[in-house]
Image (cartoon, rainbow, N blue to C red):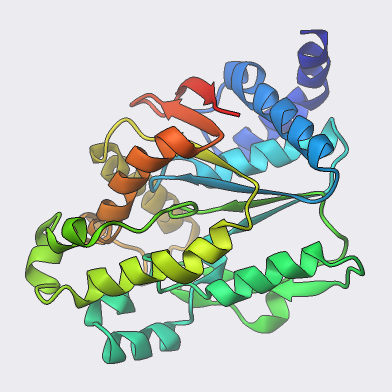
Length: 303
């Protein structure tokens, strides 16, 4: 308990500074002490046990707070445990707009919309992991994706990793997702699938990607932290808040979505999100249960 207290007083100032800067009203000091610090001690224990770079996957429904939680964990791990932490979003590995256009022409029109498995450059993430695992580390660059233009930024602005991280957090809505059985894939889950994927080409392609290269990537991750949303209806509500933030940040962008566009957009994610709630609630090492007001209800540790 004393260690928790020591950590709390050491990181409290930076935590409050961060949530004030990001204008995150759902994050309280209670969350820091009762939830984020204990999870950080759990991470430190896993890192010490492994003795080399620890790879963590952090996932949850859209708007659940993946990016925020990843950054908070980084603040604690860096300031208190003095660990070199690198946080990467699977969103930064989206294929370019032109690549998705070609995919939509070749496979199915729905692939023009980013998000589902098949729209990420998985080989690039695998290469990223391998670059960190090799003994003789060399600095390298990683892409960055700008949602306001729905494309990658210019390569000269890519992120550069100069030193070997001790902890890598890959956050993203589908990190840790598993493929479904053919019988489940056949049944449409919403009007988007029913009306725009009648021949099942889109669903089957996505599922095949999960079965192959995404499975290969996720097998390289040591532990998964899963943020469990109360229900899928909250995804729409929280995604609207997320888009509102983007709207304020990028006032001149024409890529920011309105209510009807967001309602349609989350249908792309619905099938896998619901399957992840079923799967990762059982298999993830750490499960964060959220309340409807975005506060953490409790945390379950499986290993």
